[in-house]
Length: 251
Image 1 (tube, helix red, strand yellow):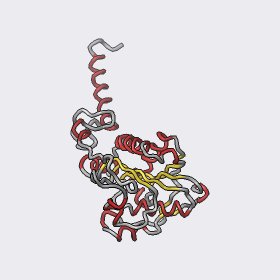
Image 2 (spheres, helix red, strand yellow):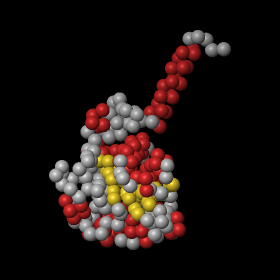
Image 3 (tube, rainbow, N blue to C red):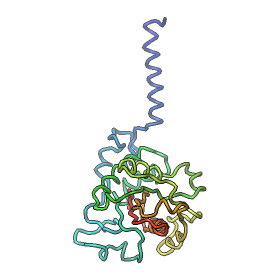
């Protein structure tokens, strides 16, 4: 039987080991600024929570981009005015793709910090539920990665988000409804019309019957030029989906 002197030291040792393991699995730094400071249940420190560049009520009803307080509708939206033929019906975004929001996306996509999934999901679900079309959604579908990129990254962040969002909305989750048919160049290296051409014909729906007559919510982490989301929507509509909506964390 251990002596009373040994037991407390042993307990402190295993407590330290347990704490170190928990810090590896559940890091206590802020997801956005990465400082080792107190964070809220979603992993943000008070400064980063207050500094999230949220998109307010003045936003484009079609592409979800932020507008000025006196702008109204698609004709006033610089994103939509530069494009003809967006294939999705409507899109929502939680934040502008800058500052703390950009860091959160990068922490998930390139750092594998899965705490960001819950944080991003909470914001997306709130935004979707505020839309008049929220009750129409039948299926939640992620933007697919090409298998070569998935191997390199080990996961598809859009799948993680879409699964969590579908559960919160009580909708059917179909991760393999959309398939990426070919590897495309990274959109970050392209501009303007080159992004649309890069995505043209990149997606397909292997089992069209699963999309037929259904309203689909397409989920991604970021949408910049809308080229990827629009091409995904094109493939879904070709498979007779009734409507396609888009939800992203950052825009």
